Image (cartoon, rainbow, N blue to C red):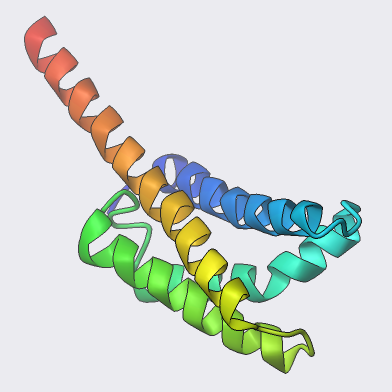
Length: 129
């Protein structure tokens, strides 16, 4: 198991990426960018991210792309959309498509960048020793 100092910042980055997704969506639809509005839009996806972070055991391998990252991404989108509708918002097909693509780029992209940085760090430490 990884130390909390390693995986917690990565989990926080995931949370911030979901908030960024909500803020970008609100901005593109000329909705207010107040904190309450952004968090209200992000809330279903933040809850879904929390659930699927536990399911995929993020604290063991927070950068793992397959299957952890993919399950986290699809689960966050699916449960987030369900919760969004249950909270009284809409989930039109274009929103579903955009949410799937943007959250995929954000959540999987973060894992790819994290993996590349870790590999670079390992290579650098191997050449130093």
